[in-house]
Length: 241
Image 1: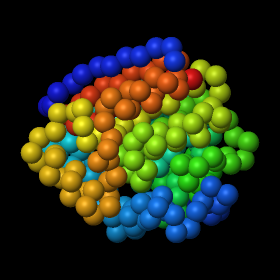
Image 2: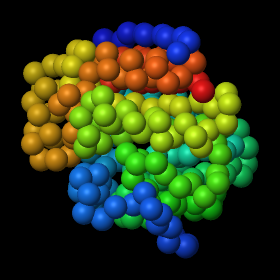
Image 3: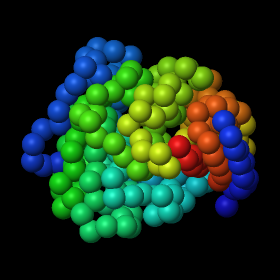
């Protein structure tokens, strides 16, 4: 089932359209990276990426990510890069009507996820997470970045500015959690290494400079407590403000 390791640190839809703000930039490098996730790809995402690639290539079943959601999601939740809404649709919220805000640069992603969890009537904001974000005064007690970091176009450690842009919108004691596939510091197989390089070549991933060590440093320098667990080639992380 793949190698599993722990690292801990301390001290340091349907409906209305997604609203755009100053953080949404047409033609930017971030927008180009987000545009990879087209309607046809999203239609296959749950089956192909979560069902096949996660299990057979990255060696980390989606149940691992779902467990992160179940453990940390709260009634005021921010989801950055929600994908198809798979995890938001399946996770257990602690309240019947959670306040959920979806953030992505790709309007197709926002519409897809919003439609899937329409029962929660989530807000959808089109923003570039590599720039300071206007989230319309919302503050959150949990935030997820699931399979987001390895897609961000800036090289590590510059891409970890996403945490700096997230922190002003979090309440004290809030939890940030998610997962990513670093190029270095996790046990890649010949298959996972080939797939990672092909995804980089095609512009699906931007993780050539990403490493477990840089992720650990980024979390440790910004959060009071953090933990990273490695399953296969996936780093599952959680941090407390």
